[in-house]
Image (cartoon, rainbow, N blue to C red; front, side, top):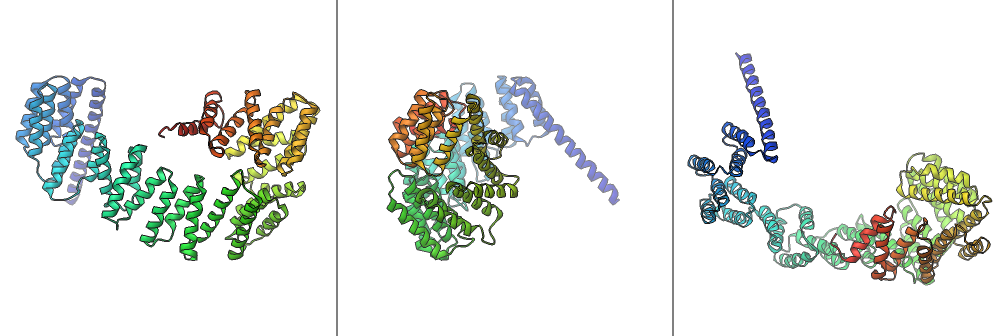
Length: 603
């Protein structure tokens, strides 16, 4: 007997799923007919589905819609009225009838039916949602809002439909009420991330003022809810007002006795956006307020030094005293925290500072030689130290030691970006030494590098060598240029400039002229000779618009006007020229983005 029951149950289940699958096939066919305008065929299928599944409101609504599109108003009226008689509690049927009347031009009668639907609404959540959805589907957002507000009142549950109301006010374009209800949802959410996502999608730049106004009021009314303070901080961050965001982050950190993570994260954002003053203030707050009790202490100290270094070195007017003061801070930090695996990343940054800005290569080399002997450092960290160390040995004139270090990294990392970096540096060594054919072969291989930066640089070097070897069978000019390139890398700027000038004197009108101008511009950048740098870039743009350095010169000149000289009106046409006339350039997308920002577009 038990086996028979099991068999009957399996037969029933199979029959149920077969019927379900068949219904889905019919439904898809009806949708296809409707979308292609074959309303009569669609109506026949929807009618069949509705009769088979009278409780499925979707089938009923689509069937009525087909009849309306076929202008079978009498039949639709009869079906709706029969449905109202059989299920009078379903107030959404009055909306269907009102829509039918409205389609026939009977607007006042339609309004009566819509009003009847709301007046007859009961506290059942399903009825409230169905009625509001029916109004929403007809884009009658004011009536949908009224439905939800009445639903809350008769249910005697406050803020029951805040998510729905926020969305409806958004559809209406009522920003003030949309914000109001989104902010009410903050009290229901475990975090403010979802609200931030919604607001970011729907608010324009001008709307943030209204958001901030309402947030200030909410913070006064409900100070114990952290989400309002978080959202206020977020609005300042969105507007890139990092100093105001920091004030809010610090207040939240103190109010809720946090560990500095909020302020630290904001410091990182400000640093990446080059607001170094705010980044310095934020990192300093974490260090001073939380000290070593927070897990962010070491990273904050490192971020503080990086921000100070960037603030000094990225300006065009720092002094030797500025560099020495920063060097003292690095040394003070390492004395406090020691030289170990934890401080190794900062030691590498300090070595870079010594080599590239203070010009003390011996000190930089000593720091990295000590660091790479630490036990417990990851192979990748040791490899990065060796690559930098190789650079500094090359800068000091020890090409063989540099090659040895690059080759060690190449051997240890046959795959990935670290190894590609080493191979690129070794290829560059061959180029500096005048072994152009070997270097060119290595650059050709590196065109397929996983790192886009290395790949692009390798392509540039490969094309550069190939073009100039073909132009000059003696290789003398290219050798002189490579020697000048090496001198510039070694920070021997006077000698590099003399070598570049000698090429122009000995070989006037040579194809390398645009490359010489570009290299001189890079040297003038390091020497902080802004006028000379601008002259070099402008000469390339005017004299060599079709050569390989033109888009580089345009982008870098635009960047100088935008970031260094604070002259966006001169930067804009240069950015525009890149994406209009050099659309294939690797700078085209970035140039378009910057142009739109400077123009004031809402991105």
